[in-house]
Length: 419
Image (cartoon, rainbow, N blue to C red; front, side, top):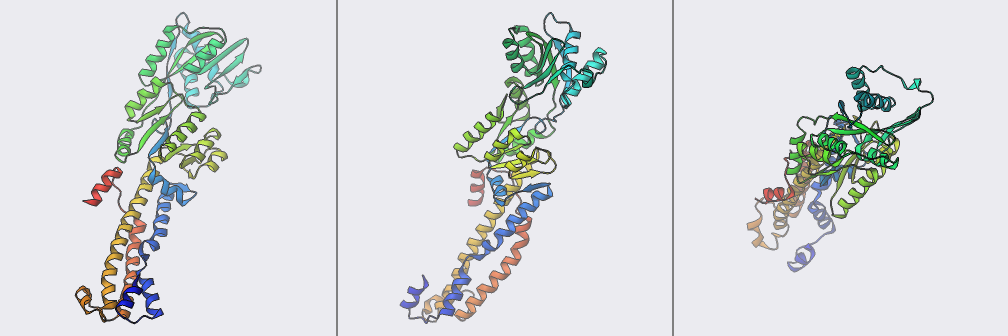
């Protein structure tokens, strides 16, 4: 671009001068700092005990527009406790307690253990061990059936999500009374989790599990909303319970009674709308969704399949960490944008300072623009090289520390920078 101007003004051209000018005018500032910015972002993740398996994952975290969050352990404390047994009409509460205890003996989750404790403390039932039931067939919980139980001594006892247990009861030829459905709805509306208990075709009653929302989580979601990020709570609970907890926590949307297939379908739907999705997971059934998500954070205590499918691993196995990961990604992008803006302004200013000095000899009128009073092309090029070297050294600490991020939507950031 400078050669026609030089030819027109009959200015002398040498290969050395033109090559040096090209090198000193290339916008090198941001290019030299990109690596430092990326390394600093990954270092901040490491300080949070999160390992990023690729630099692209950290960048994607800053562009995330939809967060998929498991209810248990992320939004709530995750240690739901059995609070009350509610028998069905015509069922003795001791019969319900015996069935609930038996169905929970092989359940090693905090919820299962709390049911056993409740039956012992409130109803005086003797503590029993799984080994005592040599002829029993224990039915484990799965994401598909959403219930567990035991077949023993002619009894088929099931405990689990109300909808799943009710469907199973109907398959056994039984019916579900409106009173029991009302009990389930009342527990769900209060924000509790109803677990139905059945023995073959008979519904025995409902277990009231109480959950507690984490302190300060509503403020975190409000902050995400200011960033323009939509939050979706994923839970296996029925819709009434899910919406009650979501309303209290301030979540934007809910996916209730979710299966692994539902998670995958939701992620694909969000991505088809042009949104970037982040989620956490720890099980083998979460692996396809973790691989599909733009930011998939696997728990360190999760399965190998989950950790291989995700592009980040949380060593603390704390699902809430996803909120910190997004904030770090946003800070990385803000830092990169700020330094890019500075680099462009710096290079434009440099062009106006150097070009007049290059041609002031043959075009004296450019002397007015030579505000730095550079006496020759060689001094102009040397000044540019020295300036580049000094400014990069000065900006590296800023790139490593990062620009302070203040939650804001993309529109607010644009308006702030323009004004």
